[in-house]
Length: 82
Image 1: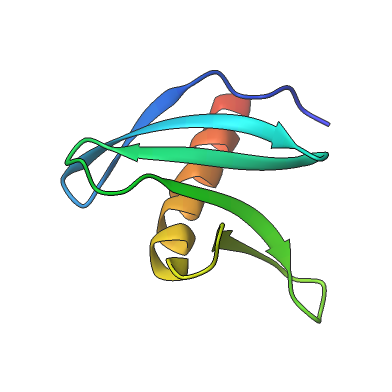
Image 2 (image 1 turned 60 degrees about the vertical axis):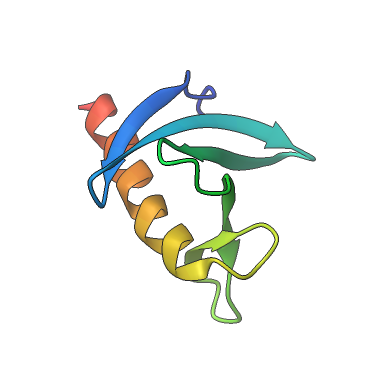
C-alpha cells in the first residue's frame, strides 16, 4: 500500500480545494476543504456489486461532488508517480 499523501491543493469549478488524506479503520479517505467556505467533504472509494470502484461521499448525499473531485485526486496521485 502506498504512503499517505501529504496535504495538497487542486482547482475545481474555479475554486481552490485543500485536500488531506487520512486512514480510518484501514480505509483511505480524503478530507476536502473548499476555499469558498462550502461545507467540507469527506470522500472515499467504495465497491459496487460488480466489484467496480467508485468515489462516494461520507456520509452519502454529495456523490456528484465526490465523483468529480475523486477523479481529480486520482489523476493527481497518478501523475505524481510518473
